[in-house]
Structure formats: structure tokens, C-alpha cells
Image 1 (cartoon, helix red, strand yellow):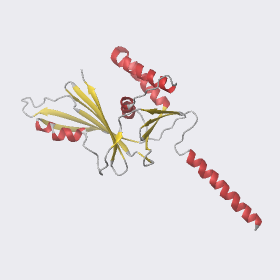
Image 2: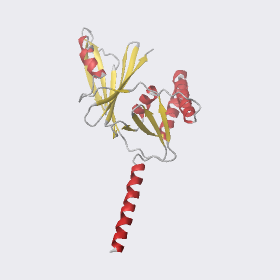
Image 3: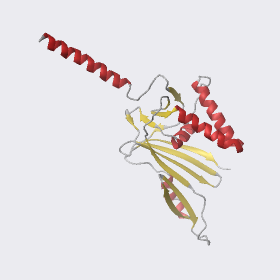
Length: 233
């Protein structure tokens, strides 16, 4: 009986250690991971059981008054084209006015992650993916000084912040670039649940443009929203 009682106690201790270990490793963090906090305008917004109005909704409601809107889906990206209703040449088309893509969490297979806290949201990327993203765009920008400087400075700022050489890290622009181009995992620290999907859109209209991204939960409720103004030359 004493032997059975002792085995029961040892089993309980073993299970407690096992569960504790699982709890500490639930996000697969290790000592190599880099964790950053950034300043951002991204905020929680009222949840209403649907995605709040996106650029696609705006185009349908406003631009359809002056243009015939044509939506074309290519893979997982939606393109919107507009032709003027009174245009004599029926083949005339404006440049793609908006592109919209829906992305979901990916399984990150890498030994070192870059973890960024954007207010209530925590994002994880493979660190090597982030560096490769900057390096590839720097390479592409060798013939375009504006692009070259943008990504060279962006990489430098990120690495300086990692090395604690910069204290200010405004991340709204870089988060959009990383989410649009890389695999990620997104986590809602408020509800302690993973973000189900993110809708990212770009639009261009003459000399102005913008980007936006929506974070949604499993019920398709909008959790957070961010719009970024962009000026088009």
C-alpha cells in the first residue's frame, strides 16, 4: 500500500513538471529568439460580428458611381479594375485600383524568431525570413536609389533597435510589409487566442494611395484595424 501511495505521489509530481514545461513552451520560444516592443497606432475597435468596411466596400459604394468595377481573383489576391462609364473606348482600363489579400497563420519552422509586440497583438516571424526580405529588396533597388535607401535604412533601423542602439521603434509601416510578404503567427494577448486571419489591401488613385490591414478572430469579428496613408508620385 505504501509503495502504491509513493508511486501515486511520484506520478503526480511528474505530471505537474510535464504540464509546467508545456505551458512555458506553448509559443515555441527559445533563447535565440529576439523580442521587441514597438509604438503603434493600431488599436482595438468595436467588434460587431463582421469585418468593418474595407476598401473593397468603399470602391463598390463610391467608385461604382463613376466607373464600372471589375474584380479579378488571381490565386489568393483580389484585383479591382475600373473603366469609366462614359468612356467611348470600351477596352480602356484604369490601373489596378486595389489589391486585397487574406493571409492566415503559418507554421514557423526556424531556430530563431523575431517577435514583435504591437500593442495587444504579438507577431512572430522567422528572423532569417525578415533579413532575407530586406536583402532581396535592397538587391532589387540597386537600380532605384529611392527603393535602395528605403530598405537599407529599414534594415539598419531594425538591427539598431535589436542592438538597443535606437529607443524609438514605430512599426506600423514595417508590420504591413512583413505581414504582406512573409509567413507569420499572430496572437491576441487580450483574449489569449491566435488571430484567425488578416486582410491586407493596397489602393492607388491618381496621386494618392494607402494601405490597410484588418485582424480577425475565429468568429470573423474585426479585432484591430490600421490604415496607412501613402503618396503616389
